[in-house]
Amino acid sequence: MTLVAGVDSSTQSTKVVVCDAASGRVVRQGQAPHPDGTEVHPLAWWEALQTACANGLLEGVAALSVAGQQHGMVLLDAEQQVVRPALLWNDVRSAGAARDLVAELGGPGAWADAVGVVPVASFTVTKLRWTAEHEPAAAARAQSVVLPHDWLTSRLLPDGELVSDRGDASGTGYWSAALGDYRHDLLEQAFGRSLQTPRVLGPSVTAGETATGIVVAAGTGDNMGAALGLGAGPGDLIVSIGTSGTAFAVHEVPVGDPSGTVAGFADATGRYLPLVATLNAARVLVATAQLLGTDVAGLDDLALRAAPGSGGLVLLPYLDGERTPDLPDATGTLSGLTRSSMTPENLARAAVEGMLCGLADAVDALRLQGVVPRRLLLVGGGSRSRAVRALAPSLLGLPVVVPEPAEYVARGAARQAAWALEPSGPPEWDLASSPQQEPEDTSSARRVREAYGAARDAATCAA
Image (cartoon, rainbow, N blue to C red; front, side, top):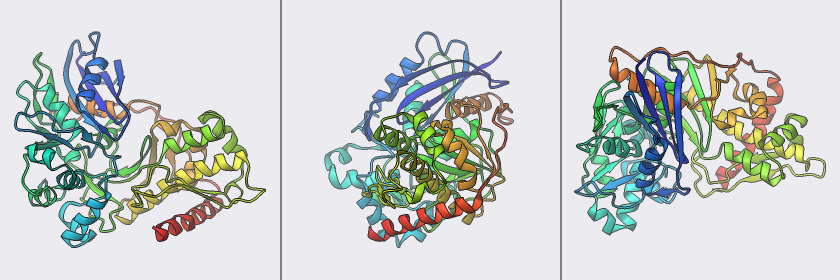
């Protein structure tokens, strides 16, 4: 049996799965936490990877791959030492820099045409501008800029070569999925001068070998890893409810959305992965449950006892600001408060409906860019909520399949590692899932979405 390993280096932790390369069956796995916060020294990821791989986890592994959180900015000096803690995707301090960059190039449409994305605070290019403006000493030391998965991959290679893949590179704001190349002019515009960037490898190209002879694949971004781990193809739309909420689809052609709602990413297979991201997802459920003095299971019980529409309560769940719509300084709002609507059941359901309505907007945006979904795969920690599963088909407007809980980002990285050993194509791995659930009560869902849309539009106008 040939063994491969996949690494998911996410915002919160490192997870490693070791799989049978032929079947995808998980043989063993490890995990280690990351520090909290929106900036983290990359050495914390390396230490977490070593901890997760302790006790012989990688014994007998032939190949491995790293899928990492997208957009994080890692600046390196001439000796490839880290210049400052990495700014992560959920750090919104560069929101002003994003607005400036959009204006300088001539507006959102110019960015969509150039690189398939319109900068918001999440993207690496905006963090480069913020650093150049606010930390000139750190900027002066920087010689290279890499992403989290790039940096971890370089640490695994004896020569420390800086490499990336097209999927993760497409989330920087200075690599174009349509062109398949960097736009160094945009990087220089953001930072004020040139920086070395990683060599972008093709889907099945290997980066090298570790000192112990394990083949290292190109790696990718976490969303691209999830799509690969799910075996998603054209027609599959994935909604992931984790720390962030994402809706993305495997697509045959590149996308450039001038509104900036849809990011025109590449995927890890040679296709494309148009994606919409929200900052507020599963933590909305957790925060609401805590407010109600219960846990997520208790929140489910309460929400499922309330009627559709939550008695008129509408929760706009911008608890950590928001990326889609681009409202980094927004806060959550609760409207429709009356004596009859102010019940724990209605508040619980409003939290579930509000979170899902934000993701339903994301699905609509993907449709407008030519994505024609035939089904929706619901994944992430939030997909385990009974209330989310019950409400999702009608609010998202698609048949929903919930794959069995698994580490799909790490599984995707492992599948990429297996592909690196057999470049003819990624292996076919079975996917266990729930029966497909069809949308029901579409009239109630439409009214819920209309009420949510009114609250969303009011917040957008106020900003």
